[in-house]
Amino acid sequence: MMKKNYEFKYVLSKGQYYSGKYMEAFIKKGREQQNNFLGIAIGVKIAKAVKRNHIKRLIRENYNRFEQDIKTGFHIVFLWKKKVAIENATFESVQKDMKIIFDKANLLKEKV
Image (cartoon, rainbow, N blue to C red; front, top):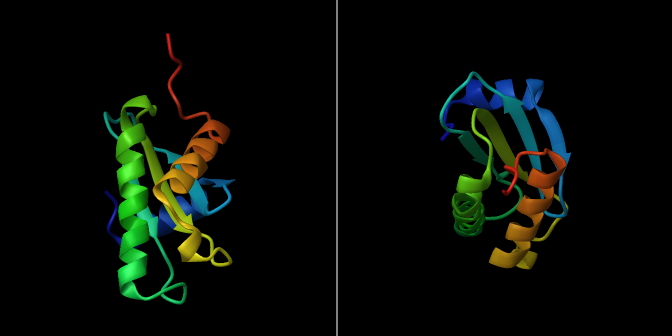
């Protein structure tokens, strides 16, 4: 999990940009690690704290479901789009959006 401001800035400036319907993702290949680093950022102007934390929980839980299927060694930052209403966010919609982003980024492992 990324927490420091400089970690977010590094990924946002050097990472590759991918967009979904609800979220945007910046993905940067890191050193050869056994795990990925996840960062979630939702702007203060989008909603009040309760709704922002709800979106963060949805993103985190969906990421945990995908974690075994994702290649390792990446820094991933998810941003919620400002123009999308938070009321439209459901578990399934976030899951579909995350799958689209991971497909675009070619992060999903090949299934044998």
